[in-house]
Length: 132
Image (cartoon, rainbow, N blue to C red; front, side):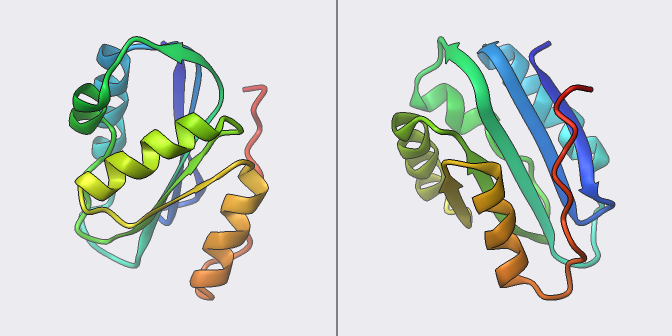
């Protein structure tokens, strides 16, 4: 499966990396895995979705609406990373349709800087190991 879910900051900043060609079925599986790991309450939670290494998808906007966001009552912001302007545009449209708080960035470093700037209770967020 072309995704990996982990914590950059335990129970605060979830990181999900997608790579290769991503299908709706795989995004649905990713959402289920993420929701199983999410704490049900507690401090603000942030999700970083890194689409830097994706090569394409066969989904339309309606498919993406159904699979993109894990539900959490304490979700602060979702951050989407992609160097592709069109991918960031679609992510922005989806988050607006779902009325979620989201920002899109070209690089992971920009996304991490954003989260650090909006929540001073977060410890330093490390860059993920993309080789694992």
